[in-house]
Length: 141
Image 1: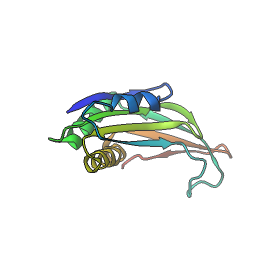
Image 2: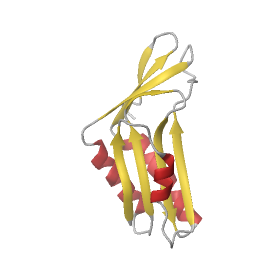
Image 3: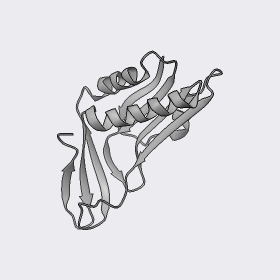
Image 4: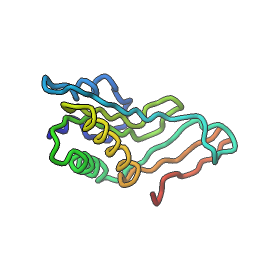
């Protein structure tokens, strides 16, 4: 098991660096997930213009634990980051890259990491709409 990147940061996420971190000579499959800020939310009256992410001080340690659990006893290399601060539409909020010998493990680990991030990572977002409305999302699961 190798966790190359597991971080919470306030700077733009580098997709290429995450993909490169998941490469090894024994890796035959790399899967990735990029979660971006979108302009539409079915609950918003007007288009979304930004998201503002906040994280608990323990969020990075929790992210590391999520990755460790999802890898389990499989051989994998993982790079994952979640951005905090104010993000505009189109900005990457989450980047995950998983390298394994075979695709099945890569897909399973990548999906498990994003699902656990959504469920358990202590990161919250405030959604800003074009009409000036700001709504907290994701609090309480």
